Length: 307
Image 1 (spheres, rainbow, N blue to C red):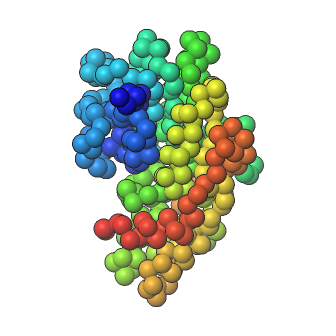
Image 2: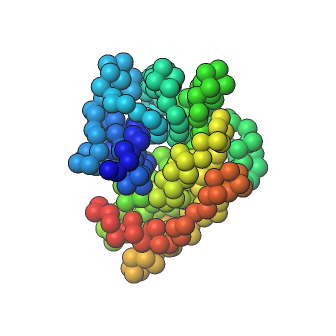
């Protein structure tokens, strides 16, 4: 008789991080996906428990089965939407998270993994960005993720909830979309190249970002889930390497095999110039190291995307 699997609730499980988390964990755990299906990237998988519901809605929580662990990916992730409607953004990212934390406290959840965002840091004051870096978000989205993160910490301190915050940097995957706040630039470049158009670079292209494949993020999530003795901590996850937008564009043109010139236009206002994270804490606490080289991940994404 096989041992019964523990159940992991993945909120936002039909989104980019949530769906790849399901793929990462499904062999070892029973997965329960909670998603409101407003911005789904995929259909509900047949081998997971699926509940259509919203983390803002109290009735949703009565639909959930017995849960041992929670990986909280559900969020309003559009920076532009957060700026246009900060209250709606806060209702999902702050109050929704608070609802989930209350559920976790009452149900004595074993492990709560919160997926935050590098948008909580704002303009880097030093590089690489460590977990001790000041937090000065530049958008309501970044602020709502930071407040949610603080609530996660508070529930750990006040109620003994076993929590960990994962802060991803510029995630990319074949589920990428153009308006994705993490690495939408990759989608835009691939879309242009596949349409035989030159990638358009804003400014001189020497801006740097820390591009990390979603499968490396989900590896870190699994490590965070298993290492329960590490609690009430915030850990940055990325590649740990800066890549310029010029390097990114050239890499994608090379992958395509096409001869396309890069086109420059005026830089965006208030664009962050340089950003990449330190992996020191991730390596020390989780034994995390990224496995997918950027060029390999980009080739997979280029081949997979139908644009």
